[in-house]
Image 1 (cartoon, one colour):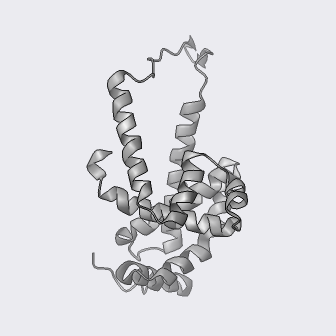
Image 2 (cartoon, helix red, strand yellow):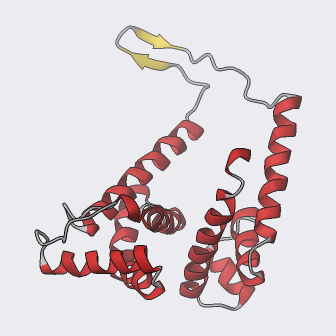
Length: 203
């Protein structure tokens, strides 16, 4: 994609644009790290304000950067990178909140509507035998993908996503600072995304 020079951007946004170009065109790790360092706290506190849970905010922050970095080819300097990043983070968080509300919605109570009370009629969500087989296949494939990660990344992914440890519990288990745990999980998720790309048709 051909981009314009970004001359319409503010000096701060112009610096970000140059970092985006380094990250996207040359896979410059320092450029990725600098962009993340600049906006990680702002994204985190925005997520925390929306979800009121530090673990969820941490995960959503990592997801926001992951999605933004994987879509850098879509960014154009018609507006600041920070604006684009915050939009991705906000939309991702809104999707998360919607899914969470659907999952925690009580089906035992009637719902008050303008036409009176309405009872929810929901189909049985238990998996049938075929769906159970498909789910087991997906879990097996996911474990195969995780096994391809470097040992330190694999251990963190297993603790976080298979054993559902909190960041604090992972830090205690691995004797690593929480900041290191979060940074390495971010890198692990990037690698997982790349590995899963090769098995895209399976999911």
